[in-house]
Image 1: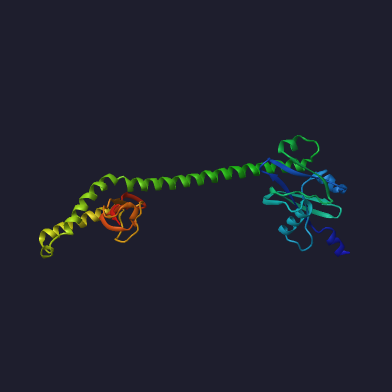
Image 2 (image 1 turned 90 degrees about the vertical axis):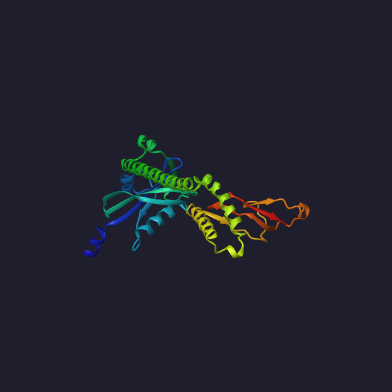
Length: 287
């Protein structure tokens, strides 16, 4: 007798999902077929998919099973619980949890529990006498959650846009600093070219002389100025294939265009770049 009494008043748990289509801003409603009278009094003729948990069934497992049984293989996302209700029937108490679900697509295939579906806006549901008070209240709560979701999504997008803006500004500032000295650097490069030309032709017996040492010191100072401004030499050597992106070919009368192999024969002046930007192409003789 006690076991029957315990069974009679054991709390049952049911879960239902209110589906919302973001594209149409409508909610999914199902019309019950041959519904028991006590359910009809609680929910009305129109309700939403879901049902009671089976024995030893998990909450998520039970909700997904009910949705699959009543709607088929639709694509959806459970957002959050939006309502908890309690009811007492002759067979015992029922705890009912309502969720908001976002409809993502797929064909709805009703089972034998329902014979009609409707997609309705919140205003249409509120103004109609066909829908119960609980359903109207549930849709109102769902609409508030949807608005909060939209505000949150909008805030996240604004935040992401702002972060991207800051990154772009930082990159632009970096480029501005890097390229603001190009004119000055372009004037330094010919001077450095002259130093290279001079030091390459110093007689052997004078390489250790004081004036040569002084010239070499100035040359290194100029190289340090370029290094501090992120200016790097474009490394080119004899035998490299000619590349118009970083090289400027000097006419070689010994190499007619129709016979030229486009191979670097000599580097006349060095080329330089800042990051990936060429600020002066290397002048080369090709063969």
